Image (cartoon, rainbow, N blue to C red; front, side, top):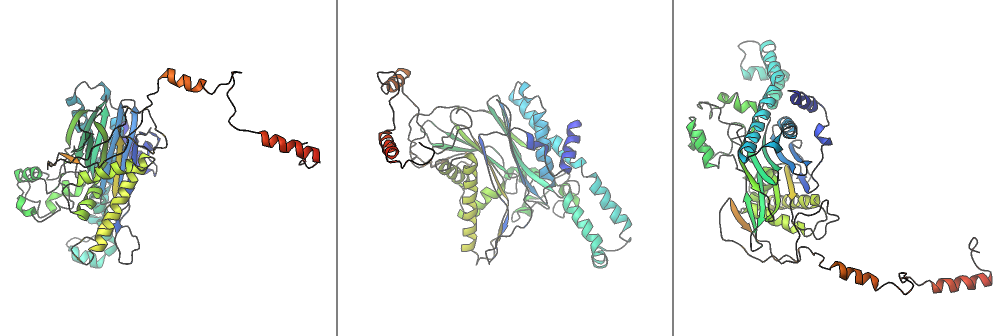
Length: 465
């Protein structure tokens, strides 16, 4: 495929071809690199930033958003973000007539990306086999090889790390005013809506594919893996997620892991969960796509099962304070970063706490939530708001998929100009004098008096005579 060749060539360059695509200006991005917490307070990253995100506007009714949470390097996340964007951009998605056709397209896009990425690993496999066959004497144990030829074994280790590179992904596609969401792994998508009482409802549209998901444990049991082996574990093979893109080490070579060797087929898959199409009406206020680092930091810091509501509440608060959407998204990320850091430092005596935080990426797509302090609205809002007060209401519902968050009492959302055209004309006419000229609003009499006096006295500055 020509698109695949473009994608592969792009991957080799430091710049991405997606840099030239038109972005959605109703979107804000917030991010923070991972951090190891040191006792001396000096900031230190554990690894390079491995997240990628997309927020593109392909036409007036065609938008594409995504977050990719890479692990074991950024190779897989980088490739998948570019390749999947290419598949969407060059597709005939707007010609799809039904929701099922769009969902099938998204499912196929995930499969294409998975297949395309695995095809790029051929050279790595060949290089590893060459080293194993030519540079390591036959019959030499791994321990002896590490002791006698550490440089050779380091090359093999580095190749294995690259082969283990994978990524979780969550994507959102808007076509013809309908929203479609898909994900693999533990990236999360939240749609925030208001009900008839102006209370914000937070709906999680993604599925967390990890070992706390009972459906995923059931799937693993069907292929011969005993779920009880993972009751006190958080990792499946070499990663947390039960689904991902890439990571050939836990897919094609899963037999190398003791816990997975009994599986009758690959335990980690790239099949996405897909939802949509959801009609975007006036109740839809904003959309959030986030990597796991954001909500997991909140979970650790405040130990609550209402993480989605907390994050949505933070977004609402920043809508009232910030001047740009990027400012909103970044302020939310910064708040969570401080929250997690302060939590760890106050509990640092507990050695069971992990002294680090992972990469964080937050994509915020605003539909019609007002920003009182906005510098300039990039586009005409789709919904007009009158002066409204959102009431302080909280639902007692404990549903994980449909929950409410407390907005607190929010002051005026926005003001609409109710002045009629005839009234506006009258206001202008009141400032017009009998000579049909607008009355002056600056009095220069004192200036002219001083000018004449200085001229008579000969003290007028040079050049003004």
